[in-house]
Image 1 (cartoon, rainbow, N blue to C red):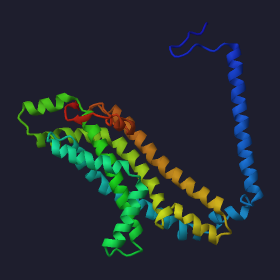
Image 2: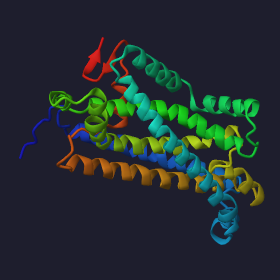
Image 3: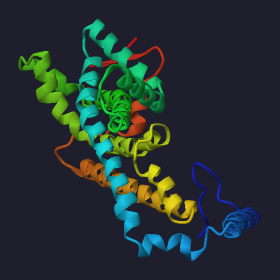
Image 4: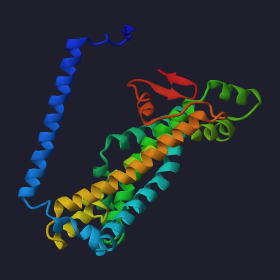
Length: 304
């Protein structure tokens, strides 16, 4: 049976198939050569010796002294940041949908300001502020600074997620609530927000992945004893096994973030199949659609 051409491209002929096969083989050979070069370089520096990797299997102190306490600090910072940023972001997101221009303007200014500043700079400013104006102990200051920076940035991002979730609902929801005499506050708290939570959940879980990864910035610049920061003391106490330590920590990050993203994907599929859902699910990419220059979104759509 003759193959039908698709809409996007024509079915490749025999020469095109041979050419594509050749390109694939060349690419695989290039990748294999790169992997061989990396492994050979590591072997020349004795980073693949068994004694560099053995402590992670035979010595439990590597885990109880370095990895597990650092992982606990990472999870604590991420959990505190999410717990604080979520209600703050919801408040800012609702304020951006206000019909009062000054409320919408103030909330929009705060959101856009903190979204424009890198998380690391927010952490550094917070650390300097805690050192100058508070009596927070130097031991706890890195945690406070990391959480503050993550909260300020992620609350502004979550504000856009909340706004996108509410705007994804059919306009008939608001019209029906107004028809039965509900006030603006009642419409938001009793009709729109509960339904929007369903649409926002996948994006919220995805943002948690970003928070977990950004905790590493505090370890790099502020001395916060998170997971990535545990590499240096491990390497110093176990024969300069830097590559092995980085690899183990990277695998832990991959497993942790993969578990979170898998949960987010499962949650999104379940929400799409839910019969009582509105059918709208807000992803991270959808938030960026709300940030077109010169356009502000109101409760009923774009406002020029």
